[in-house]
Image (cartoon, rainbow, N blue to C red; front, side):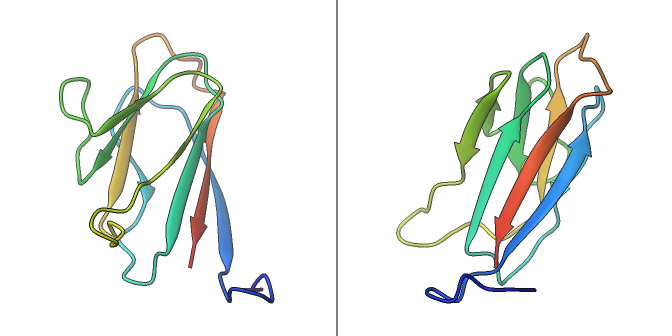
Length: 102
């Protein structure tokens, strides 16, 4: 995995097909330094810092065609599993773009 040559951060890119069932967007990773998600689908994406995202159990809502970066808390970044679920009626041929910095 290549680094940017300045900070030593290595980006890892992934794409996930939209789903009306909870899916893993990023596995737990103790080396995570950042996480960004772009919702390219046509309905809201509900993201949960934890397992089993649901329409009534989520951490953040990302609207269609929007970008979100995981914030730090007290200078620390969440490194556990990140799951997501799209609202009913999503076109499952559309995706989310996941960028994890290691």
